[in-house]
Amino acid sequence: MTTYPSSRRDMHADITNQLVAAIEAGPGQMTMPWRRGGGGLHLPVNADTGSNYQGINVISLWVAAESRGYRQPLWATYRQWAALGAQVRKGEKAAHVIFYREYEGKPDAEDADDNGKRRVARASAVFNADQVEGFTLPEPPEPLGPIARLENVDRFVRSTGARIVHGGDRACYQPSSDQIRMPDEGLFTGTQTMTRDEAYYAVLVHELIHWTGPQHRLGREMGKRFGDQAYVAEELVAEISAAFLCAELQITQDVRPDHASYLSNWMQLLKEDNRAIFTAAARAAEAVNWLKKQKAAQ
Image (cartoon, helix red, strand yellow):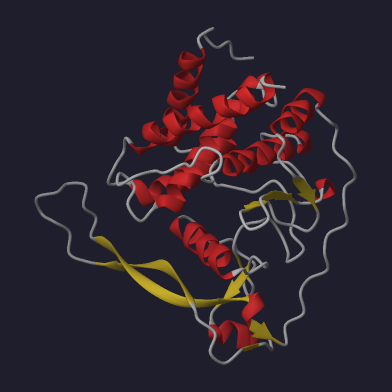
């Protein structure tokens, strides 16, 4: 088990530096630790090929699904839906994904490492399963049964006063009802580096951080540093906070690759500011400390 310095600030800085190092080292492919009724993991999936979307396309499809209220992780082009016997409803708005095609070009004579291969980006319009008719969704997975409870974490969450609602296959904070929605715990499968129990609690504390953000709590404002990417910045804050809380509450024994792989996808949208993670980490520490104060006040 990793031993952290006694200073809370040092501990948070240490975890942040570990996350940065893991991101720079290449954390691998991101996965979500629960199964969805629409088929597979909570990652955007091509309904025709069954393949997960990758990289920036994960983020763009997540944002599209969240902003438009889509519940299914399945996407496909108009032609792919037609080949599956489904019809995109008239007037539905497409989301867009980027893919790359490689072609042979002329190598740069002044660059010994240039092999002449070039890549060109192409955009493709895709539609969610909620936008089509005539498609039968896959059968929902059978629940795996309850997870093992971590009493110290449950006590911490209860002490915050947050309202947690279980059911369905989404994990999110809903500002309209001021409640956290969690998937049925029987849907959690874990990942290669997290058990089912650890994965459940890691997701729960991630959503708990989103719960701290509204104006009547912390009123979290990311400011001009992040511009129009406040949504991305909030996700950075939530996942860094989750890493902090996983360490402090001993949900996991070390900084997990899962956190780094998740963060690396969001960081793609912040490449113009490679220090953004440290600003997000400061907001994350603020949120964690605020939650601890709610517990101490009881």
